[in-house]
Image 1 (cartoon, one colour):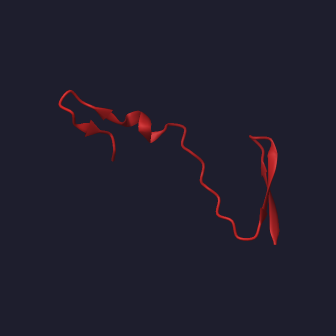
Image 2 (cartoon, rainbow, N blue to C red):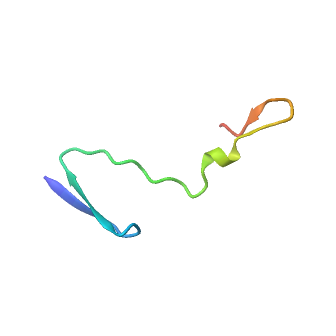
Image 3 (cartoon, one colour):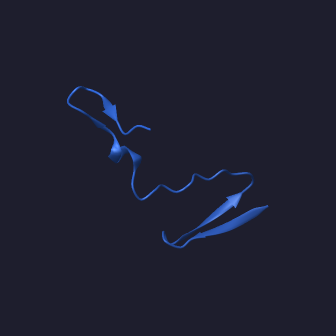
Length: 47
């Protein structure tokens, strides 16, 4: 069994054959942008 998935924004087709797990899309705002270290050396923004 195979499926064809159009990726319209990227402008191509993805052919899925067999059992394939695809990765989810990434958010518009990466979580890494919220990680920081304060003046005392404490890490903030991880969770």
